[in-house]
Length: 348
Image 1: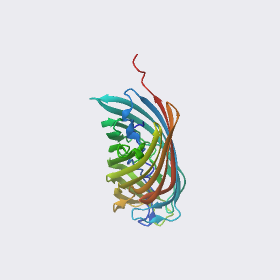
Image 2 (image 1 turned 90 degrees about the vertical axis):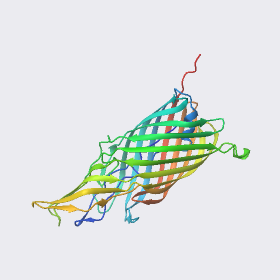
Image 3 (image 1 turned 180 degrees about the horizontal axis):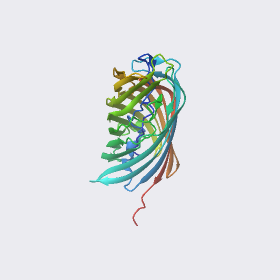
Image 4 (image 1 turned 135 degrees about the vertical axis):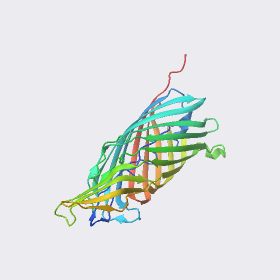
């Protein structure tokens, strides 16, 4: 049995602005809270007893050999390494006879070995937007092996690491994001005895973003051909969508291996209300809207979990991007998840 989960995907949405703006290349900008980090089989946790508490620790890293703009063009010699870690707490209860799960997360993230030609390659890392979320299960029946639940994630704009001068930000530009999600798990053993232990998992969500504040600042020194300061006041972002599907084999509780595919699209970020103030002159030049990035990728996953004790397990996700537009294409990435279970004391 597993537990409902998420994760901030701010790193996937880390953005870069390149192209000419009154004669120079600009910096990268906002992160994006989109999708979730739900693992295969997580919705199967709807069968855990009320009163169960879980403490989790996530550690992850990914390597990218290319950044692609929103037109699908790769920025030459671009690369970066991503590191993230977050702590999550989970509590299981009941509402109207149905399982309910309450969760909260505290995430941190950074990038290293960043090279984005045409930018300052500066990185703003650290504490990113924390998340609170709940899951309500319409169906959680271990006997027929069917689980169906609704989750809502609230990404709170409290990450204070954002820097409008930096080339890369792992935090959003003070954006609130609401992510409603449906999760469905079906045991396949009922179809044929040869499929005992096999499960199908489907996770689908949409991420709704509020506007960001001051996403872009570019300072051109007096020695440059165009001395002055470029600023954009507002960041708009369209809705992001994400779908994951897994085929999973689970020989016993807290042990499985799964293969899956994930498709994310939408989430186009555009910097608006731009202006360029010329140094030493009372001249302000209005700037056109500036596309930044989007949440658009096709990703493959291999996931696993095995128990270290009856109340402690380790899980992992190894992934690769087959395609990416408007962001870093992750050649290889891996995440490790440790979970400590605190089960309720049975009544005497």
